[in-house]
Length: 489
Picture (cartoon, rainbow, N blue to C red):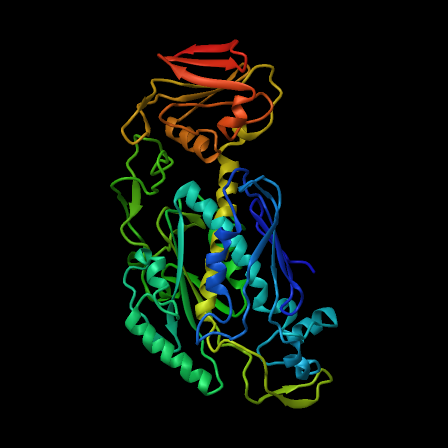
């Protein structure tokens, strides 16, 4: 079946059905050296798992992930990561009645129209059960983003039915606030009313929809690929790929239809400090002499022209009521004969509480993909393999380090490859090197290259070439100590 993979450089492929043996995902693009274990995946899987509260489906799945490949001695190897989550509590007998009937609101008819046959047990491939491994992949992406840029992604419920939460500062909502109640709404007073409504829907053998909001903070400016792979376009596709999502908006969204341009625009203003919080990252791509820039408001939802602005990325998803209902609904058989259907099985009266980790996961997968794509754009001359007979040298000019470990007072970096020297604005190159994993220690200014490969860790570099700065000199020595190059600053 086509359409089982998502992303370009951080790429996730899934397989599995609701009532099959299990679901599996393959993650490509995770850099080597990321500390990773099954314990990193279980918190978000626990937030997604069925049977977690009185307002979710009572199907009881442990959802314990098994990492099958791509991790050795607690760290990623850089190769494909395979994760398996087995199904343990499926009850296929509950779906015998729908083998020859189409459930309203489900993909039964459309799968038959496309393939000529379908797995009717719990919806097969169209079931939300498939999202287990997406959440596992999202947990990997979250860890990668947090370590690289201190990016945090938090989702929460803002509306159930006609009950609206009051969340004046969504970018300040914490995971602890979200997890303080079973509906995952950080407004606890409103959460109680939401829970009461969901319980009433269950007692009436009905279901209810609502809205989820997802906020990503500390996303650096500049991520997104015009024009067809805009960040907003990929996030929209990611959200719509999730079951039950009928609408997606970001920033002010459809609210812009009521505004004038003078009301909708977010004014640019100087900002104190860095937009991002990762040490060594510039607030803007304009160099250290340019003031940090932000906007006075965030009606644009953290994306302008489909490229991240440095403001929090704010998304909202409209999630429909659960389609599977234990009451008679009008439908037809696979032969087109009128009939009724009452869905058996165990289903959520409201999808929102378990939807939150799914939406967070897809947001993280998109951001991880665009982080790697941005690195590739910024560092083409630094990341390609070369065949020069001498090591590549990075020479810093008038290098100083402030108390926070940031490089200041630089005239330029020079990337010397053979006889070719490329001059770049200092802070831009610093960001390129940091993003590429080449600049490992700003304070000591240690850069290590090999003629055929760029090393990503000191242990790798030690096996061939050691570089270090001492007494105003930049020295490059072989493992045996023979001097290769020496530059006066």
